[in-house]
Length: 159
Image 1 (tube, rainbow, N blue to C red):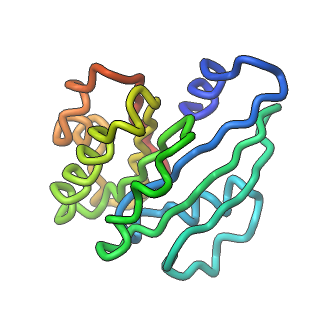
Image 2: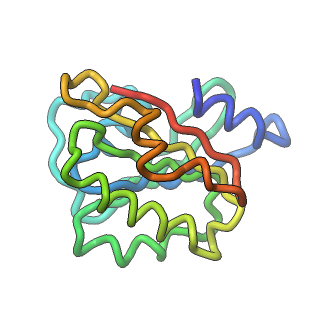
């Protein structure tokens, strides 16, 4: 629901294509999300060692989704994919409380990038189905998302 409402705000022409950049730490669920959006079987996923690109049609939108690996050694290369991004999707493993500070740092770095200035951000608080998952509201507070003033943003629970 959050993604579609964000896309509706961006849509300027009936045939507009949008580029979505899918980022987050390793094991957050980015590739599972991408495969689910593309109506593919998400049961056999291996860590993304570079990037995956899928074009997905969704409710009249043509989405080009760039899923970039989240391992620490790959993160410095994220900035190579910032240009021409229409929407940033940042996926967080809500059950991985040990890495909440790390994911908050990475998100803050991304949001400070000039090439992503003004790009709306959808933060997906993923893995909400796990018993130890932090609720989206707690994640938003911990990451101080309420202080974001230079772009539209939303946090959305997901599983």
